[in-house]
Length: 464
Image (tube, rainbow, N blue to C red; front, side):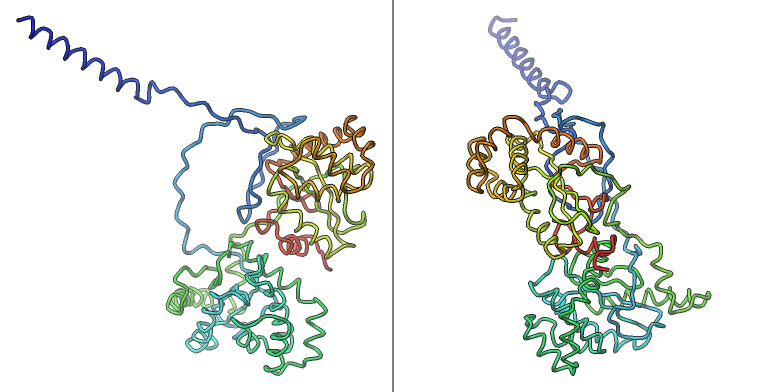
């Protein structure tokens, strides 16, 4: 072989070997994993309540404070099974429901709707089509869905409709108001036009007697995952899009066949719906078992004799906690004698200034101004250094020298450690976390005040 040819061969072999080496270096078997950022193992900031009924988390091993640990590698999610179109939901009926059609109807259409909801107003004429097509074979039940309110006056309008329902005028009032003005004057005009006894209507509306009914309906919507507007169930089975008369008719016809079979087998028509939905799917709005928390020394808002106590685990640097605070206070303000708020400290180790902010809040509590200081901290979450904390103490009129001494002495450290320990033992894995009478709140997401009230009314007898 000539010298030039040998050079070409060796050069070709060198290039081939280099390319093979580069490919091997890039293969998964030789890849070096990238560093994983540390994340808290026991407590992490999380968006509040993103599911209708999250499963209760197991309590972690006791720890004196949240600690960091490497985050596990993400696991591939298993493919989700498609939703069962024939899933039966536990849609409970009550004597307070507004209804069209007899109780003996073999098929019951339950409508979750709201005044001030454009989609609900668009769907409303379908109800007349159902009545015209089926007559006494179908009963329509109206359920209020006002958490969160799709319009500022949705709850007022729902209460006004129940005042009309007390006089047998619900559906006339419904047709007058749906998709129209919902201010007090407009509601009064509608009640007058449909022939309500106005003195009784105003008295019933102003008494607040229907608020609990409206909120319990809305909580039921959350229990059965009826999140979209409007939400329609036929003998416990949800209507899927498109939500129009044709789709509803097809579902009614399907359920009618099943209803007739069960009636022929001996189930009375008036009892059929309750039998069908009795074991239907639903999501509890509280999680148990109940937990006893030590509240000695904890900041509180409301009397010790309150029927309902909210134990609230928060972190002053958590953005979701700052959004929760107004809801909690609005709820307590509505029931000043029956609701007590207990503040439980849970500073997260992922927030640099959470611990010192918690300690500063307890130094303020030592001077009887926890809640004032609490509000200032949440309004200034981006500025929680020691100089900032001292400045806020001066702003709310604290004895600053005493505040500094208490902060230096760590007057709140023991209580903060206790609260964090209790939270970890109770399975708290994020802030904010809310317990009602020791039961974990799993109600409407975002902790709206109406959701807190609905859970307290339905599960703990508030308002009775």
